[in-house]
Length: 331
Image (tube, rainbow, N blue to C red):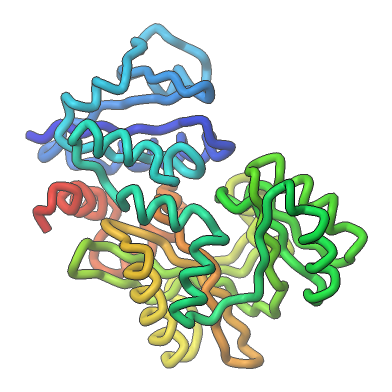
């Protein structure tokens, strides 16, 4: 029986989401095939192991955990990093596990780092001629000149985002020029680079689930209609007002186009194991653009990735087993 480590928590602002995803993954491990262990990472970056990891991170109950170092990972056959955002989805922990020689679920260093950075991934999508919104990204040093150029060249509304982040944390929809700098400063709270994207007409946000290494399983698109002006953190995890269409009610030619674009994007970033790739659909123009790629998508019970994979014949437990086998290159 393979020993597997579920790693969660972490230093990212998405720490709370990681706990929800990790609970769902842990619940759906096939205990007849895999022997699961929990590894918690605190917001300060310390590692703890033990059956009480969830209570430790949520309630500060340390009675059933012990502090460990990263060498503990060498005792496992597979590691599943259920770590959303910086220090988990950006190639950081993947590099550590590669150094230790431990197989892990999901994309490697290169794909993780590229996909995490919304600006760099958009640069690559642009080279590959994938349709996407206009964009500009910049550091704090470049902020003043960049804001002037954006006000001159972009039509409002625009979206302002941290370059490296997820779960809609730090994202603002800016309708007026006067509010742009405030939104940029808010995004800089979460990253040292910010991206501003053209606000386009969106009928539906669409998401594709990709699974595999060389032979890929690509789901039909799932659709979501946000309960807010866009799919905010509160809408995702607190209010949960968004309506889901699984699969999405869209023309078949758009569905096929999105699946082709998703496969191309996954290959561009040298993806492996899994990813969720997001698109924006304009029904009036019957057009679609790529939004972003997520290499460790949400794994909560209501998350789109496991729901879409279930349509492909991988209910949650079988999906987790498949991901472990892909990590071992057994599939």
